[in-house]
Image 1 (cartoon, rainbow, N blue to C red):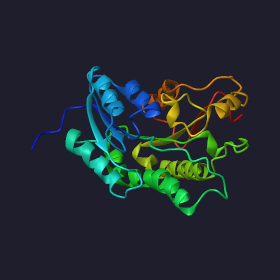
Image 2: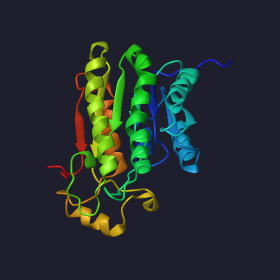
Image 3: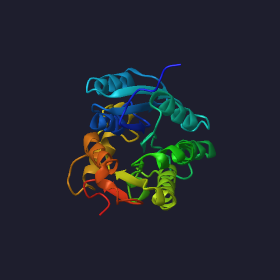
Image 4: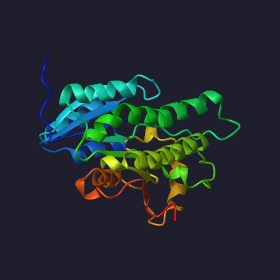
Length: 255
């Protein structure tokens, strides 16, 4: 049996193949850092993210699984302990957007969002809680969304996603209280409209993206690296006294 790799700090990032997850991995990558990069399935994008992190001296492993599957969270925690012997931080980023409106949204659609987003986060924190509390500076950051706060989006409503993300934010606040005595902090980041590295993966069409710019005071889309910078800050020692908060990184969209 191989011994765990030495790392001064170990972070698990779900949904790390592209976008905010990949940008967060890049922001954290450094000598002495261990990263567990998750995706639903293996892909060239995930392996490229891992390779770039390793070039910076990061101990990096990949792991796979659907967050709606009840076994995935425990598996990811096991991967962290097997490879590093510890877990210091969790970035719950995996997810998707469903823009079907009430009347179009089926029960299966609804369950898919709740199971993968809200229940997936619940299972992650349940699996990782003890390890995070045992860490010298345990950190949890959940990636929420502006759709939990802004609802007048024309034809771009996201009722299932809105409900799931709002639930994640409530769970963040409850968990922050529960873990506060151990020094473990729990926060959420709520991005606005973020530039997609792969436009084909977007839940809205180009016309809707153009309309979105009219709702953003800064008149531009956010970049994944800008969201990742805030996540990295919330994971840092500098944020030891910040917990239970939702950080809006949206160019003023929710003002």
